[in-house]
Image 1 (cartoon, chains in turn cyan, purple):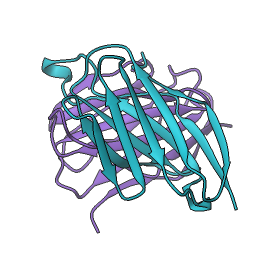
Image 2: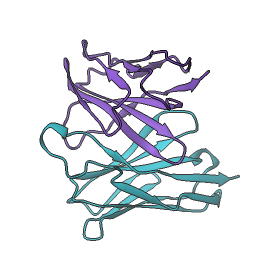
Image 3: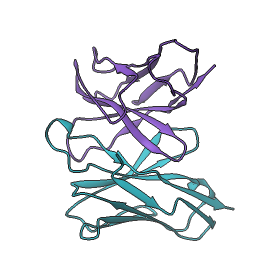
Length: 115
Length: 114
């Protein structure tokens, strides 16, 4: 079962433009995380935002969380060709007890940044 | 450098054969995970382990088996019962089973059927 769904599935922009990706989820969460995956590689953790936070920044990344709408967005400012990758959101979902710690990943957004 | 090492990078399986994918971490993490990634499907959890000598089934455990005899190692066996094993397999770890732990990933093993 997948908790998060990213939108759009694919995004193509020019270098210097901003890229915005959205994630919607279904149940209550404690935190939401964003990961990046370069082609043929493992995922790399980008940022974690807790349910009591509304916005978080890390370098050129800005993440927002709206728990009332069960949605999050990842903004990459001044995109570079090196930002080309797939981006995934992951939530901890409603699990408690023995399943605490597992994450639910969405299908990802494929971002292409053209030089 | 601390990290997660998966091997081999590419693996081929014959019909009826069991194959084992290796995952080793030197991050001193308690929790480890195995995911399967198919095109357009995102990551699906196969098995996870929150402590040595303990593991739980994820969403797609049928046809797979794991062991966790050592903290640093979490091998995944793809058995002959898994009829569609062709996929990209990712191993991950986190410090513990806490709610706010990021996961650290290896670079994956791509498994194909001969």
